[in-house]
Image 1 (cartoon, rainbow, N blue to C red):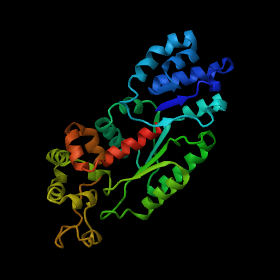
Image 2: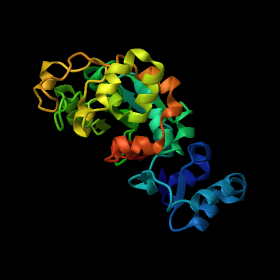
Image 3: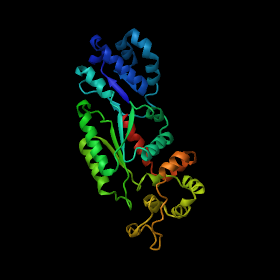
Image 4: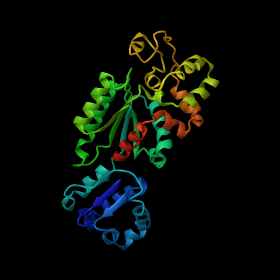
Amino acid sequence: MQLTLSPLCPIFREDSRHELIRLLELVLYKRWHLIVRPDLTTLRGRLGPQLWAQYGEFLLQRYKLITTERGCRFGPAMCDACDPKRLVDYLELDVKLLVENATTDGAFFRMAIQHFRSPLTRLLKHPRVVEIMQAGGIGELKKLARMTMEHRAPLILEGAPARVVAICDSDAAAPDAPCAAARALAADAAARGYGAHVLEKRSIENYIPDTALMEYADVRAHSRAAVDYILTLGRIARDHYPMKDGLDERDVATGLYPDEAPLGLGVGDFAEDLLTHFSHCIETSDWRARDYGDELGDVMRLLEEHI
């Protein structure tokens, strides 16, 4: 985050020193950029010699990276008259990353962050920065997002990101055909102001690179027939193949598969096993090739807008 404050922000008053120190500690461990208009000299003057001696070197180093690092930009509305405690209470909010299954989806997105946004990996280890929460299904995901928003609504400042992000499978049997629950989640997020992303492919399993699937099948022999068939599919069919359970008649009716396609040929509930024990098989280049539209990059940018 790039946090911009006015030089007249009340947090710099002597009676708000406690809140200022809370803010500086947040900037330190969340590795934010702190800017006070018009330049770094102003920030140094507002902090004073003692606090600058303690935090100045770090702030200076971060300042040099402003143009090269991603993240959201935020400055409180009416900063000259803001409430310092309310400002810091908001800034202390962690990001709630809401997923259907915290174990499987959590492992998937941790690995995606490692490959696509490695600097965020350190932040993901701090529960005060990001907490991955399990909903238990797409329908329950919307309920959890609403409940989370209700709890933190009094703390969210005007124009600030809610720091609630929900990500779900599309369960789409064909392109641009997410299930009703996924569409409802996206609509609810737009209406209530939290972040949401519905995966374009059918599920997280459809993003696993072919090379990793081959390595998995070499060791987990029960998956060999399903993996061999999946690897013969064209790109779009591969995106929407029901990886766990295999095809049924409705999938074949989409026209993505031949009429004689085998039914029920799935890999099973393999994602946690693969992501836990075969993570070394996933190369960034292979993952980008399977993603091919930088969709996972979009997910990373969504997270960065809230951290």
